[in-house]
Amino acid sequence: MPLDEAAAPIHSIISLDELEAKTYRSKTVLPRFPGARGIYGGTVISQAAWAATLVVGDERYGLHSLHAYFLIAGDDAVPITYTVEELRSGKSYRTYLVRASQRSRPILVLSCSFSLPEPHQPHWQIAPAAVSAFPVDVRPPEALKTQVEFYARVLRNPAVHGRRRRFFEMLIKGREKGPFEIKTANLDELWTEEGVEKQSTRAMYWIRYKGKIDPSPAFLRIAIAYASDDWFIGTAASALNLQRVGGESPLAMLASIDHTLWFYDVADMGEAGDWLLFTSDALRTGHGRATVQGRVWTRSGQLLALVQQEGVCRTTDPGRIGGAKDAKL
Image (tube, rainbow, N blue to C red):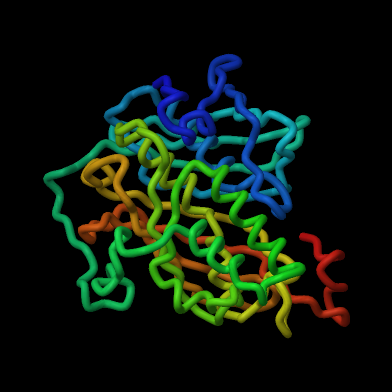
C-alpha cells in the first residue's frame, strides 16, 4: 500500500521503509512539537499501526482496535524501527504485536486487531440527548477561526509579552509545520482573549488534513490515530486548571502512559479531506495520573472512533515531586 508522499504531508510522516519481512523503519524527520519532551506520540502510534496494516496485506481486514504503551520519549534525530509479530490469524479477526525501538531500546509497544466487516449485524449509536453523544449545538468549522489565527490574534494584544508571547509563537510554529489544520469548537470555554487558559473538563476540535490524503479506509484509520494524541491528556490539565504559562497552579509534567482506540464505520466518513470533530472529556485525576476519553465524529454526527488515554499529570509541588525540572516518569 504505497502512499503518494507528495499529495499530503501526513503521507510522508506515516510512510515506512521495509527492511525485511515484518520489519520497517521510519523514513522522514520525525515531528516533534516545540516544547515537547520527545517525538509526538501520535506519530509513533500511527506508524506502528501502519506497519501492522502492511503486514496484514489483505484490505478486507480493517483495523478496529489498538492499545499502545509509551515506554520512553522518542528521539526525533533517530529513525524508529518497527517489528511486527503475528499473534493470531483467524477467519474474522487477526491480532498483531508491534514493537517500536530506537538504538535497540523499546520506546512503544502496540497491540492491534483487524477484523472483517459484518454489515448485516445490527447497528446502534448513542442518542443525541446523551451526555456522550454528538454535541448538536457545536459550531461548524466554517464559522470558526483556525488555532493559528487565534494565536496570532492573542499576539496582537500588547499586554501579551515575555514567556506568554514566546509560548504562543511556539504554538504557531508547531501548527504551521503540522500535517493538519485545527479549529477549537469551544474556544470561549478554554481561553480568554489575553491567552490565559480557563478551567474546563471538555475540549472540542475540528481537524482536517492538509493536501489530498489517501481515501482508503485502511489509511483513514491511521490518520485518525495520528491526530488522536494531540493535546488529548491536556484536557485533564484543563480540568485541574493547571497552566502551561504562569498561573497559581503551573503544569509541571504531562506525558502519555497508554492509549487505546476503537474504530467503527470509517468507510462511511464521507470525503477523506472533510473536517472531523474530536471531542475529549476528563474523567478522573489523582496521584499524578489522569484519564481522558475521546470521540471522533463526522460533521453529520456519525461516530467513527472512541479513544481513551491515561497519562502523567503533575503540578509543581516542591514538597512532593521536586518541581517541574525534576519531574520524571
